[in-house]
Image 1 (cartoon, helix red, strand yellow):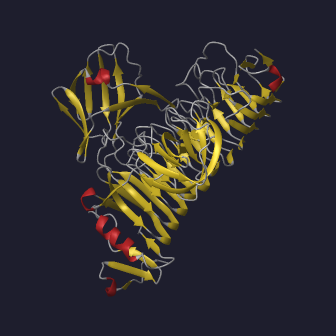
Image 2: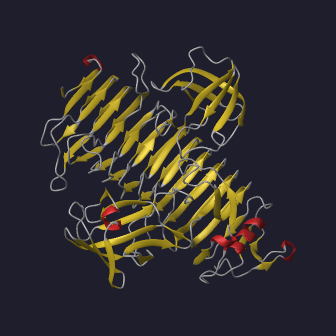
Image 3: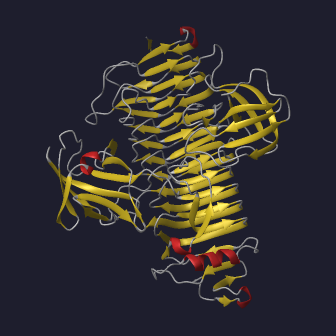
Length: 601
């Protein structure tokens, strides 16, 4: 049955819309015209506003979106840019949804292609939203790629991907796109045969002389004596500025993303900020098959900042990212002034995170000693207001403890989600597989972490660098396979790192607790397996440790497990077929806090 066979025109809408049924609204523009569909799509979105349970439909095919007719609105987005990098926070949005409730966007396999730097879709204060069956791509990705053909100490010849527009100006390659040109460069080399993504530099290419020797083929002449690359490797280069993101949601509830392919995202990935109950099913963040491209995101894949409720990620596939596939965290704000016994002035400290309300009336908060990451007092927020993009003022329901001091932080413990990540594949990144710092229940089950450049899983918490909170209290890591990870982080290339940034250790106080790592398979090329700091009730049991031959050379011999200032740790009953006997290294803790059948150093 053709769902578009019986269309009824509704003139009272005064819009170019077609309605397949009372609840179904289709974009009144055929696909594959290669014309700007932005206005027609926004008209269809507007027609859905007062129809509870409406379904906004695309026909299968390609729709193009241009910034000239896109929605422009100011948004401050976590982990993106500071005042100097991007002074103007006006975002350019292709599909804009604000204050919608009970809406389904049905793509029917449509491909949405964006021109210039844009946010593909944005949900603002929406509830009960489903987005499904679409692909998102950019006509000119902001990642430029070239395949290395020949390399000598004096020159490199490279074939530039057809999607990577460039010009040779004054003997230098200039990367450009639709109304933009790269100015600051971050480079990763992809060995797609081995699945290894390593950091590199644009400097030797920038300092060389470039000449076009055939269509798309460039010879760089200069000093490449220390350049590490091999014929067949793909050099990927992007501008570090995060002026837009792939997609954005803020203050939304009950959002489902289903069967979505993000073929390229600029800036940061799919960002959720202060949202509740998010379900991501069958999301692919990988380049379009057959495109010849290597990268699908210039930074993270999915980023969750200050969310609550439950986050579910299942059957996802991440491949080709310049940063972490998944990051879940809150934000510590620093106390800069005690205005009165119950009123605090707070400041966003990390240069790329600021400008959004981080506390709301009724929220529960924890006061935290920054250096020790030790919580020492709870309260509820009576009132919260922005003083400036960098500062907030909060009024609490009780006096601040006498122990509070300038430089401590406030953690919002209401906006902390539980998380389930399962049956997903993490590969093709120079960075971590996933980061998760939340005090609610976390389950990481039945995933594959394939040759991530850094830790497959990082549990952090800090109040001195990224200011990403908070402590974990219930984490299960089970049924996963970890293969060849951590090659960008030696000698601290642990597969799993529990690494809170507490610069002061307080006797008897643990930052993290109740972490169970069981029934996983670790395919190792080097000695490190697990590091943990300031963690209580840690279990590493019933895992399988195997050795990878002919992959990467192992480093210097060292302990497989490193524990620092931990309590009540069990490492036992693990199956090992390694060419060495795993050992445990202890620092600043008693031997009696460890139960193990391994040798302890």
